[in-house]
Length: 284
Image (cartoon, rainbow, N blue to C red; front, side, top):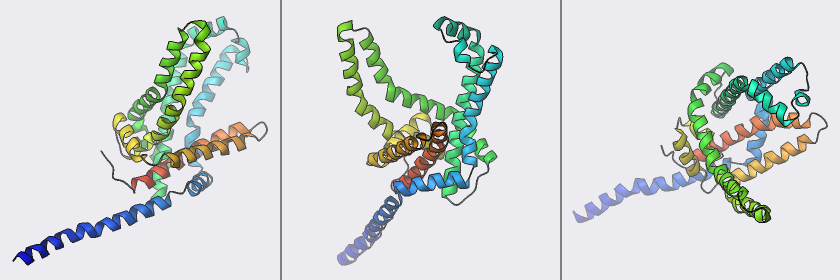
């Protein structure tokens, strides 16, 4: 009887011990698939094969262009910066245009968040071998605006909030030590700011793909990027290098870099997030 109990105990433990190597093998395989160079190649290739990614990314810039044309038509010049070049002229312009500034700012934020969410959804669908229309991505993406905006504000406060507080405190310091204090503030917060920015780089993916709230997506992102700081840092670094190289093209280089690297970065982070999700469970 005792031997039977021991045997039963061993049989009960066998499945758990057998599944552990399988899980580890699956996790190792998933980690091998997260190759930064391959992901970046796939991201830029997606832009060429699916022009809808570019159309989505350009949405907020269309709003900015409309606002610019509006200003030019009202001021009667295509170089409005010459008309409002002085501080007093700029203040008067802002006072007279405060309503339109608010309208265009809200429209820009809404289109920016919608386009980002839509790109994430389309990239995730493409990764799974499915297709998602431009209209379908926009319809689903617009639902994430409130949570995505709240998460964006939280990230801004967490990353840049302490820096602004320290700089604000330094402004009220005596003039002789002002420069020294500002230099120490920047150096003291620079490394933590970079670290936190990298750890929270995938918050939009967690928010959109997991339907999480603003706080929940930040926690999930922090959990998902644990132990993967250099993976995301290298991705961001390479995207920066590509942007600089493209920017060297005369006249149109900066514009091309912005249009290509921006959506490619969102796609790359989405692919990284999906890869990391295979290696660890979702904590909702």
